[in-house]
Image 1 (tube, one colour):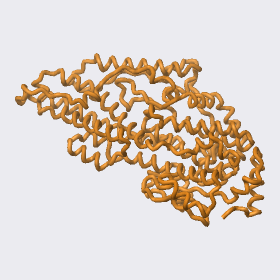
Image 2: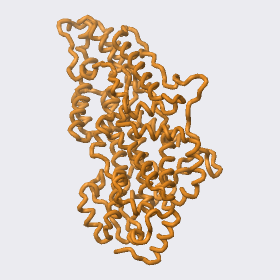
Image 3: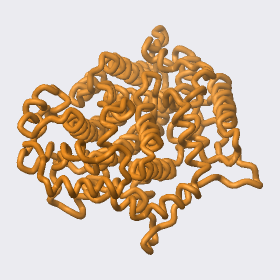
Image 4: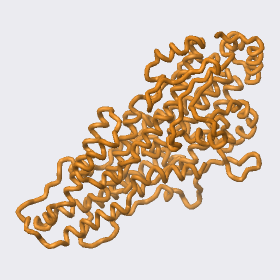
Length: 530
């Protein structure tokens, strides 16, 4: 799991952290200002309104720290009970340091060298006599390296027995829940009390230097929450299990709140957790354990579709990160540049500043496109870049920008399949009526990328859509399953055979093994309505 997270971190940032490009731009500035005058002293280069807007430097609004999931996840593993207050003060202090640096630093643009304020790290808040909290999960079955699927079998795609497997290791899961109860309680409380997930870039901090939370640890906690939910529901403590599933769904919803501005990597990690939740909900539907909860408003809320604006949210994350990179690396130079004598500003007709103006123009135009709810078209971006000769934007935005949008929407395909399955079971839609039902669902029954209708096979009762040809777009758990079974070529769900019989026979609150006893009776009666 750790290797997968580390690789994801690298993949997400290799297109956006371009130290070589930044260094090249700085060297270009040195070259420009050192060249002899070519006689443009009467013409002063102006910063465009778009660039001026990008270069605005304002103090952090303390309101952004309140009920913000980002603040909590950054300090989740601090040993102090008042970790939230400590992180808030830490972020405010770093912002003041950066703001002072940007406003007061007198850069000598004739002298090369790294420039950056000295920021403290959150780990420095830990007293010397205390240790950082950590998730404790012991590998099972004699393995050396922990695989999260050991404690959360439903993370394995198309694992038809994952609920039974979860029950078979209930002792180990309960032990893990006990050993990690403090962190789990903190994590659940953080999700419950958060209203959005807004990444805060302290003034002057390069995104390459920004601290990242422990995504690996939080994925473990998320998996334990899902397993705990299954155990509760399996042993008739339905409400407690549903509350945990609601927490798992809210963690994802925090990303898509209108006030959220998560990091790109945060969006991708949460997209992976959404797949985990969907596979768990699909398994619970198959097990019959939700038979008497199908009209529960909390269950309906967990299954409901995600907002149509998720693509715009991801694009906005990319633009905000790009703006942060741009500002911290060029603000001091632009400030120094415009303070030079006009004769030096106009050397080479201000080609350096012209390129930055063009870059800001493109970002401004992309912001407008995104605010209108449109998905970026890579060809459009490339044409804008070529037209305005802003190569730095090309380096950051193209061609991998749309890769992450496709990854996001491919996972939405699986979520929609599970949602449609839920509606079919809840509303007791017969096999013969499913095609008509799918036609009535519009885009919710279409592939989010190809816009092709989902396929339903009445013989196998499988509702599916083809996987993309390129593996990088496929949800991680599905790619793992493909390694074991190359025949997997679809995102799919299966409509349970004995769903109607279970509704009639299984008493409400039946224990887990009892539910499977009733499933067996239903199969014997073969009472499924065709």
